Amino acid sequence: MKKIFVFCMLAFGISIIASAQQTALTSDGKVVVLYDNGTWTYADVKLPNTKEVQKKAGEVTVPTNISVVDNSPISLKDGTVEKMAFIEGPSKKLSKYFKHKNIVRCDFTLTSKDGKAILKTEWKVMNGEAYSYFGFINDESMISLELIGGKKIDLLYTKDFEPKEYEKYGFSTYTAELELNEEQIRLLRNSIVYKAYMTWSRRTEEYKVIAPSYFIKSLPQIIE
Image (cartoon, rainbow, N blue to C red; front, side, top):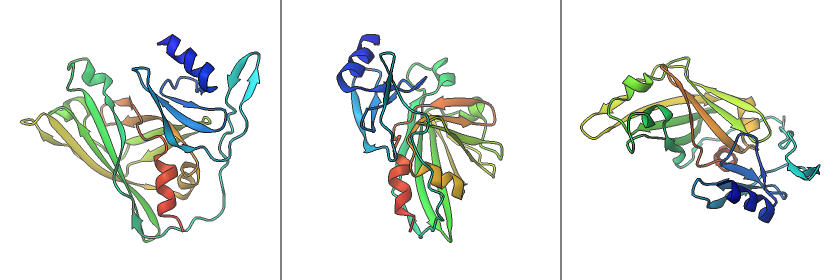
């Protein structure tokens, strides 16, 4: 695996973000997603407002101020962005007990209505007793997103949401909504997400982001 990363950095001039083994940035600002099997793909977006990658002491580094936040007023228009999978990968907790049935997935649907940006999150846990492992979503739950450039955003839930458990079919679902404030919209519309954490009522887990450019692509569809 180490040989693969070395090859990628030499061949493509990629700078691996610290502690983010799945997402990288090329010298011309393109985002690359690296997979555990050694394959890679572009994230189909070029990071806006980038500065040239600097080389120091033979190493390639990424500046921490990659994205610039636009503080101009935001005007939202009514609309709904097509649902897309944002998170999909194994749960650390479930992996201790299940070899295969350990995947957690979350689909995002972004909607704007009456000047509010609402993010609908549809979680699917491949276990028919999700409450036993994760509990429920409450007013202390949040999705924490780490962005390329070092910033972090906490998307807070404000209501309680209990899971629907389908023991017969071996999965559980949580459907919950949260609101994006103006500051979050400003930052997310120019940001690549490379890490995501979910704070359930019983534990916090990190999950794999499979659509790192989701907000860059989706937010312009609801902004005037």
